[in-house]
Length: 243
Image (cartoon, rainbow, N blue to C red):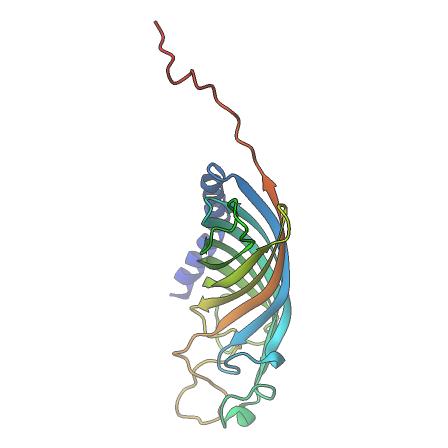
């Protein structure tokens, strides 16, 4: 079973860049504007050692991305996000057993994602409106490093589902400023290297194996827009008939 899982994840990783390339081609064929940008912010972990938003568990992270605006309402984005991810029973205890367990972790996480964005307001049209809230969702692959010991064998590369909300503001026709909060739903319970125990030995070194870990990115982004002008076509070509 582990071998099958490794093959599946391996093929998913190999096919991920090709999938992005196909989506990018289809989006670029219709887009009138593309953007490149970067962002700075932080990663937040949620799992057996920490829940909710706690400033003690936010670590610095950064992102770079390419965006293609398919229409006035929908954009397609590919990006890479990386940073530290950590959690500790001593800093963010969530139950009375945290002191007994006294677990902690500090890892590096890299994510490659592809998402679609939906803008709620007509902000890029000829109006006085310079901002819009937006929703995004898509798929991602992330990898982690820095786990010294593993309680069991698992792959360091896993899939996730990114989704969240943001706000964009037009500084001028070329530069946009944004603030984004995004959650990543994982299918993995070892971001913190803590999962289920045997249920017999009460050593408190385990967590809830039925509750997968998650991580979040919150940050400020700045991007530059490139405009593409479509080539004019002759109005007579469609009416021209060959004799």
